[in-house]
Image (cartoon, rainbow, N blue to C red):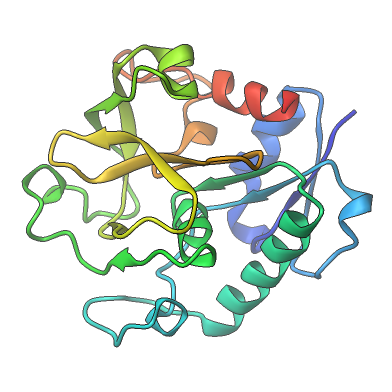
Length: 215
């Protein structure tokens, strides 16, 4: 049974835990910097905005910042990367991966037309995305498919050896991977696309989570 560290706040990680348990994995939610040998992989969950100090900017639209949480999550990420353990980032988690490798964040997506309606962070919105033909996401879902998003920020400049693999129709990054390390990230929420009632338009999130457990 794979043991997955979810580096987040327990009151917000129930969907991730439920999804991994359905795949016969053992999720553990904790913000203690671990010995990576105690876990098979790391999941960085969604959450509030990253403090712009971590990508060298002043605050120009970031909201509900928790600097200490960001610092701890980045420390945990570093520990897993040093051991070359699998890492998956979802929503904020994907953005943390990009920031860790030196990339930055678009602090507000108001100039991206297709994302004007994604500002209700408590409600998913379905929209079309396009994946690179040579990507894992295309292998799982094809090159064009619908996902769920609820966010007002996105990845800007890519970090070192980070490859963007999926985009919304307005160009906002929806998926990434590392060129050599077992690291993947998505801006959308596969953990909320695993159980009924499901939106008929959306892809099955369990396929991506199952792949992650096999890396």
